[in-house]
Length: 109
Image 1 (cartoon, rainbow, N blue to C red):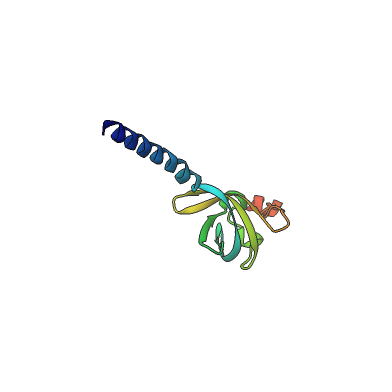
Image 2: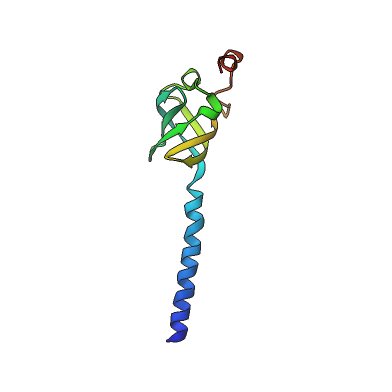
């Protein structure tokens, strides 16, 4: 009986260890979808299975609407933070980066 209990405890510990990395993996990643709405420093992206609120300020500043439109098909990489997805990169279907700053946008900052 002691051997059975020890084995059960050991297996339970392995199960908990096995679950922890999965939770961390959901914190960052890559998603592809269609833009549903755009605002000055972000947009919502429908991936088909979920809709993400994307913070694009680090890439587009307050000029997201100059670079991204409703209906655009995009791929984003980044991480979840505070209920939003902070974008590290935004690319179009051709693989080109979206939200390249123009000199006038940099001057406006």
